[in-house]
Picture (cartoon, rainbow, N blue to C red):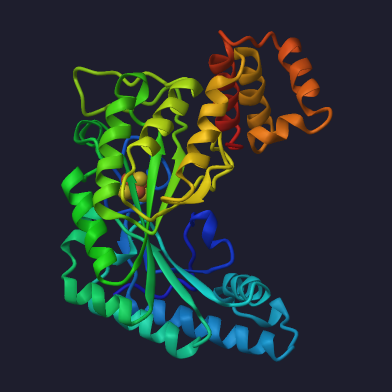
Length: 375
Ligand code: SF4
């Protein structure tokens, strides 16, 4: 039995969990083989003893109670194991203490009875918590019994984030995702049937120049069979040195242009049918953050964003591509803010950026930022 290492938090959470208390059930990723993902690559997976997780929750309870009573806590009076808990408690109190996110990459891999015990303990100590969410791999969720999933929902787990990435079996295999289209559908449907909200992540660009159509069509087909509560886009950014299709002897991944990715998202959205999901593009690295709406009523508006970009003059497209990455634009409509377009046009001219070389130049910029740890 390992000794308690103090309150722990993992490295990442979805942007929508910015105000949540991050509670670590497991460390790192039990799969850790996806070729596009470097988050946990140098770290070994381990389960945390359930008693340690309970102790973390108790510590947060003690600290938040003191903070809510207006007591000033001096860091020098806290044991080292409580110091990180103090910062977590303080920011959770400041953001209203209404949501909890279970970490790391696949918390539901813990034995169901242990997860349920943790959920009950959170609910008991923090009855005001409205939302408890977790990342989950399709492979893990597909193996949890329906009864156990329902018990988790009853104990308070109300949203799961699954990284579908794509539902093309060929791409899933080439990027070593450890899931098939059928497995993604099974896990998604089970989650919804258990009464747990489901957020499915779609990774734009994962098919590269060669497989973008297959990626769009197969993923839309899987999503149509699941009807998740949320569809969230993430954009693939990988180092030039990485071999994304590591599991293929036949294909090399070819970095898609922004134009290809736009056509891919358009084709994906066009193929969504008879579902009621909210669609979000809630990450700052996405090219079109204004994609935000609910199906079916907002479908034409969402398609309109992509059609508008495709109809723009190549020089304006290049300006938007650069301006978005440099923070001058968040959405297409920002191009009419006085002075913005002129500023980006002059940057394009200074850097010799043209419609022909814009993707290569932006990739060079992103690669530099990745090396500096800024992307
Ligand atoms: S399952 Fe998720 S966290 Fe694990 S390697 Fe794949 S993408 Fe990364």
